Image 1 (cartoon, rainbow, N blue to C red):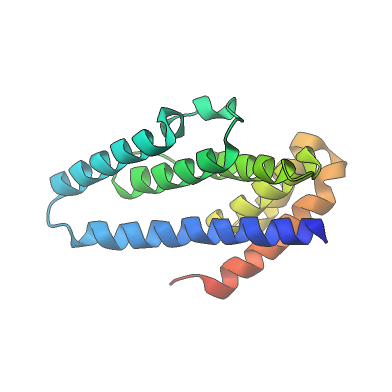
Image 2: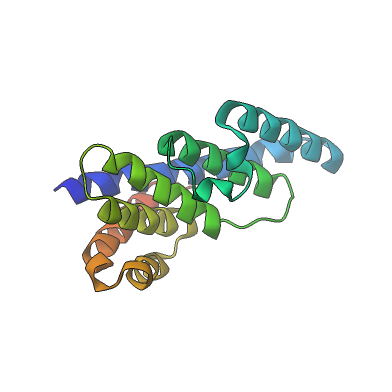
Length: 168
């Protein structure tokens, strides 16, 4: 039951990252020039780094676990702004980092940390990247067969949430 709640919340967070991606893309399409969209994205990224810390702009946050929820939110926002702003980046690593930190945040409520992180990673990959099988295989490769059930649960629930609420 706890894993189902965890997956639903993290799947919803993945859906939130997806909506943010679509909304920011719509905003940038309204900007008349490429230069202005780069400038706007740079200003927004500076604001995100001021609010959430400079760790969210790179991979240094992999080691930072002191404020996992703030890191997850800042990393999701900075990834969306970077990609939609025209810079080269990908969504795979940010999804893994955001899922890991969301799982770490839930583990502070008394849940098993490795299960929470496996669910978080699988839920974020499944809902943001629309890749449910990859979302199951990655935690199993990292933690072994013991992560199979949490990964399947995380991937399935978040994929269903994604399919129900996605924007085309």
